[in-house]
Image 1: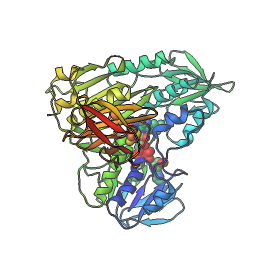
Image 2: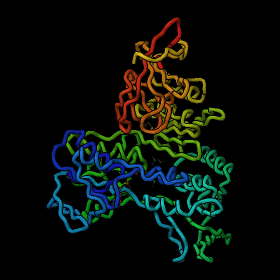
Image 3: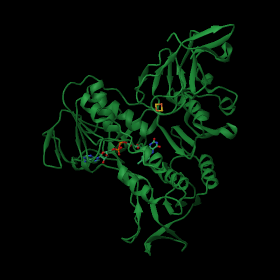
Image 4: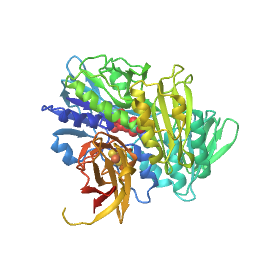
Length: 405
Length: 105
Ligand SMILES: Cc1cc2nc3c(=O)[nH]c(=O)nc-3n(C[C@H](O)[C@H](O)[C@H](O)COP(=O)(O)OP(=O)(O)OC[C@H]3O[C@@H](n4cnc5c(N)ncnc54)[C@H](O)[C@@H]3O)c2cc1C
Ligand code: FES
């Protein structure tokens, strides 16, 4: 069993292969020069803590040894030979596989604008990226974040909490356009503005110049922003090149079926790099979410061992913004009907029902204690395709668990 | 665990079956659970993965699920049951007397 990509999905898969009873060889190949680690803290604790807490490992060397997982660290897989069932690693080694799993993840999308070489522009995907940002943000430093998505906003929150002066430039008319409904985005925006982050929407960046050691961000309307560091968070693109060169089907990610099998029955894919059909939604989806990567990795491992089980987990995402948490379960479309439930000062929930009344998504923003239970029950209802009474959903005195029957 | 002191934690009717309650005492924080059969149990309140209170999680049968990353614990024993939780929590003796739940701390 060979796994390409030692992130959240690949590591979960390697562990799950052993837990699923596989006794043969498990090889986990990763091109980063360290043990597998979690990415979510990169925009959170690793930026906010006064001393770097260090990476949060997904597996220690002892655990890898105990599970007999051969971890090839700092090695890139260059090529898959589907006919010969081998992969070629960067040092020229060839490894044979019985089943192959691709968990190559995603990488930050690049801005397609002119930027002068001297300007300090960062993206955030790896621990090394996080350290580069960490080194600069601090009291009195000026940070410009391009892109009002989750990663950009978490970096903004973290930088302002370290005393930096932060401006977020979003090209769209509002924050988080891809991810959350407008009402929720407004709450998050208000939280940032109360914390001192300046937010400009409809801000189209034209180019980035260098100006006496600082970066000068020039907008289409001629406004400019000087920055000690520019952090670009404008989405991610799936790492599909390896699969593409092996002529596997690609469509917004490596195409897999509901059992996470690619167009080659011996090759599987999971995590940010794959696009998969979901029984709850009538379209192919690709997620960039921590829980999905972990569970999809484990599910792919079971199917590599022949379980042949469809992956049906309800999509779930969380983001920390300051001392508050946002959680989203499911997926909603513009035609879905929103039902709001106010939790007063503790938070706000929104539920999304199809025009026929089926619950398809729920999101909450507030303290973890106030929203987590409700979103979790909603997630269970979404998975069971229930159509709860909208008035009861809106009524904060109704325990959501009671709507599950 | 024969040493320790019985401390009143809550009224017996403060909890319905499959409900949780946070209980703080001295430097300790616990979670009290009532099982579907009506029994009362107490374990350490903070998840062993990160410092998140389990009283904010949900209960299914005898299992508490952590609200942060969905690690699970058997609240009767404190045993960690699903990843990322892998370290067991301490459990405490519980008794009910005159409609009050007592925990031995
Ligand atoms: C800063 C940041 C914050 C985040 N915060 C949250 C959050 O709050 N909540 C949430 O739900 N999600 C969050 N995420 C998303 C979550 O971390 C990802 O969904 C998850 O890491 C995806 O796991 P993966 O295994 O699919 O990919 P990755 O974790 O990206 O792992 C893929 C690995 O494969 C390696 N690789 C690629 N190609 C090759 C090759 N040819 N040979 C060898 N190795 C290769 C890559 O270098 C990488 O190490 C965050 C992500 C980032 C970057
Ligand atoms: S904090 Fe409980 S599982 Fe992570």
